[in-house]
Length: 409
Length: 175
Image 1 (cartoon, rainbow over the protein chains, first blue to last red):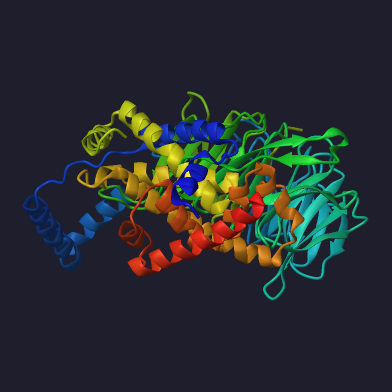
Image 2 (image 1 turned 180 degrees about the vertical axis):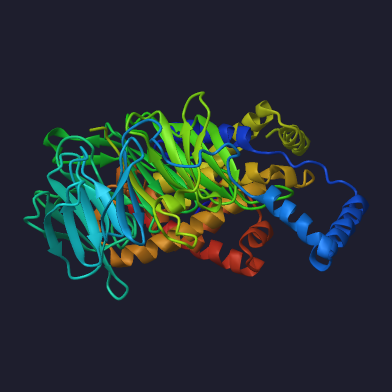
């Protein structure tokens, strides 16, 4: 083969979508550049050494002398994490709506005035779209439960049930069954408990997500790492594309035009176009959202109106900055990013208020829930959360999980 | 990039926070890096992802970057090695996946309409990578060897085999 001809062919070969890719890449690069924190010049070593020696001397005094005990208490107090002016008890849900909360004792419904009711011994639960029911899980059992605890129906699966998702129409429920030996399977059952059927016998760990509007289209990642969208009524695959095999979270924007894939290291967004009668669906290429290179994605979710994306990141200790968590608010393209909140340690859970004006974040180390407004107003922190869901328990209770923030009734 | 010194100046200014310098570095390197990734992986979405990933890594490491070293080879090394990794994973995946599921995501060589793409697609990924580094990005075999951590002789033999195979394939297409 003539080398000059090969050079010319390689330089002239068309690259599909090159200009659009370049524009998207430039936006990402500029966003990443804006976010980067330039490294400060290192100080000379000797003052750090002197400080280290002084700190070691102080530590020895704290550990070894009686007088150190009192000082140790002061230090413990100073190092306690959490928002300073946290409210001591949950007396209302800022922003309204109702919460679904899971503890080892079971699932709880929290009313707008902060009052709560134990639904039953369900370690996992999810709201129906209008909050009229809860789909609750206990081992192999999936149940539809009214918020007062009345069980409407139950079915028993052949393996433990997880990751239940109620369709926006309210008439279908998707769920996974998982065993260590066989992996996960995806099933769908009607909202009245009838017609339970297998959708895919080998799926990845990400919970499925429903198209928010129109027909019963369900997106999931199969066991081979393909993102698939299936019409659960017909069983027909209407769209597919390679996805991240290690995707842990999927979310569909409210208007159905964007699909989010999250792995522990990356967020990707892709355009979705639903064809006439939803017989075919086009999945665009996955575009990576610029994130700090050392960030671990904890969770991400579109706002109820689909215009914003909230992302919770964990950052490792680096230079003189300790390990911490960051909450970002992004536009639906992931390009415009705003840091809403940052805190030392680990934040977990991320739920939008039904009206999309607040985010609820859990801070287990501080035993606090944080209600963070997306615009302007101050963060409201509620402390003592563990005890709120372990009444009468003498020892420190387990910090609860938030399973959903639902609509007003 | 006009010269190494101009590039070093851009890197220095970007390190000091100049967005314009970053934009210039991006403009100087994106297209060739993206083309290189595409020619190795033959998948538009993957090529974009790989190139984005390389630029994000470059931006993150900007403050630690040694300005005496050229920026392009460092970026190309990341791009081509990630493209090779992606292609190997994809080959493994294709052995267990149905063929039509891939038709959605990756344009076939025929759809692109280039005999070259079809011929490149028939080379093993290791040979595609050295062809791209040698004949698109103009690196010498010794430099390619350092980038891919291969002996220079291995690079030369892969280039020889790739050229022979491409000659056969493109010759057949022309008949």
